[in-house]
Amino acid sequence: MTMDNQQAHLLKSDFPILNTAYKGRKVVYLDSGATSQKPQVVIDAINQYYRLENANIHRGIYRLSETATRIWSEAHEVVARLIGAKAEEVIFTRNTTEALNLLSYTLLPLLQGRTEIVAGAMEHHANLVPWQQMAKRHGLTLKIIPMLADFTLDMTAAQQLIGSKTAIVAIGHVSNALGTIHDVHKLFAWAKALGALTVLDAAQSAPHLNLDVGKIGADFAALSAHKMLGPTGLGFLYGRRDLLEQMQPWQFGGDMIAEVSYDDAKWNELPMKFEAGTPHIAGAAGIVAAIGYLKSVGLEAIGAWEKELLKYAIAELGDVPGIKLYSAGEQRSAGILSFTLATVHPHDLASLLSDDEICVRAGHHCAMPLMGRLGVSATARASFYLYNTFEDVDMLKVGLIKAVELFG
Image (cartoon, rainbow, N blue to C red):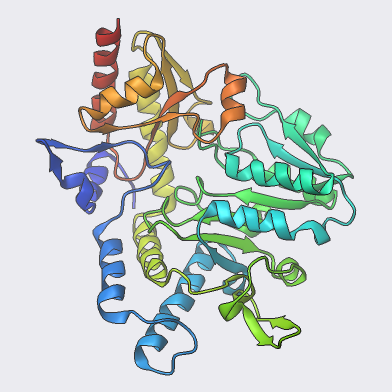
């Protein structure tokens, strides 16, 4: 499928929340970077599970339990195919944050005595603080790849930072704050040539780009269902099987146990080894439907359409008085645009836009160190997805001009 403005309007009709008026206004949703809206097929899949298929997985020898187990297993296979992995290499977690924290507590035995972790200047807190705290716990050093003035990573500095002492290179594929798409292929190639482990935060890329963890060179990758049309409370950790088999679990109980006595326990096979307790089975039904929807549209088409929206937004919003855009441009960015207005605090701006049902994010976007490097405490952020249109950008521009006029 090729996407254009007309197609985006048609897709918008699949999302109930985007077609429901509040005080006579339909929502203009420009915050998909925080969480995406859900199409009816996803809502239906979750509803059907709770209405007709609800049971716990694995040990129940009856129809409902067998159905729930099938849904759970199918979800692993569907997610694995999406990212070019095997089903046993996909661990279901609560979200990207939990997946990355899991790694920060289990990778130490794989570091082979290396003492440095390298991350980028634009990382989300979820791909910064776990490594920061891991470094504090174990006497490691966290090194940061600096950002250039054009909002891209300094690749010359990166190549110098990644060396024989590097244990882990952890990079967000797409900056959630600025939208910059990082050259993870090159970064990970340098890392792997020197024997370092590679960790990809794919929370902002998986919903928009074709993702093949093998081709990228990721030893591990983390992503979330809720940013890709699926339910909240469900995330995924990809890990190379040979590495996952060497790692110890960090949570215990339920299906992750194969055998247990009062003195010891043996762990189950992958992926159950890392999936303790009753999981989010309804979420598994939802993500299968969500990925099916995304594939019917085409991730390549979605990514291309978002670049068109970003190009249009940069051109249209650029002449709003007092605006400053923080973007590497549509060729090097996903559909995210951060900005400030000289006379309006981002929180006041977001509140004013909300009066017209225009939804943007305002704040530090879980990237406080980055905001410090930009010299601001916060920005406003519009993030686009397959259901956004040129008219949504036009409404945002009207709202920004209104804010400038109101705040002088």
